[in-house]
Length: 303
Image (cartoon, rainbow, N blue to C red; front, side, top):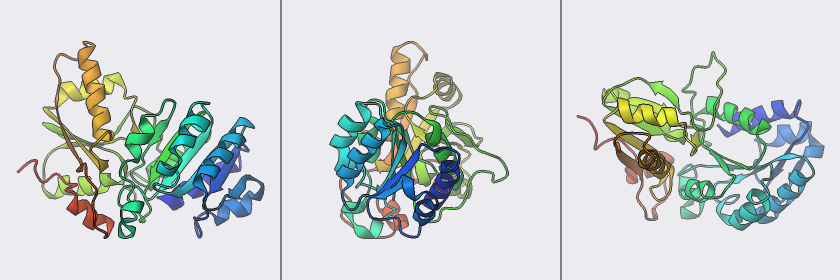
């Protein structure tokens, strides 16, 4: 997924002369093509992510659409003050790209487990949060962020994820409008990020009959989509590789509650959230192993 995103960014930089890429002394074997093609629009800031964010904000004020790139928590949690004040407060065109979503860097332990980032980033005004599910969505995310003016956050996996979407068509993604992945009745499963693949595999293997949607963006949901969920399905299930506190599932609950309170729907639908329990996972291991440890499955649903 990360390779697809950077490859697409290279393609886009050829026609979008405002694209500028910064990295925090990593990305070797991934970022070299961009650096070679556009040496005057690439900087390795070093292991100084807070400085990287401030440099990005300065470049954005000079008219560039700047992408910062680092591992999971380093361009996000470590830089929250700079993201809030230097980027979002000024509505600057800085796109924070965090590679290694959730447990993608599982063997490195809690310091590398990116499990609170969605909650933190989506709470800041002006920030657009994007979590692609596969290389096709990652490519679409690069296209969106290349033209989006203002702050953005892209949360991508790194484990060579297979394409889930149809390779034969060009995918476009829009904030607030999840993508239908599987028709179904009774219950609907909403996912964001790379957990989509395991969820689809489980639904098919267990023949659950659930509808499944991928939500590449978190927040600002289309009202018509929310109304559809509330009227067509008995239960809404959210699944995310993120802590339950403040994450994707919380964003759905908030949106539905606001819609209900405003009279947009006649009843508040039943919403069940699947996510990482609100505690640190004090273990190291593969992404699949830590997903199992955290209970990121539909085990408690269906037959």
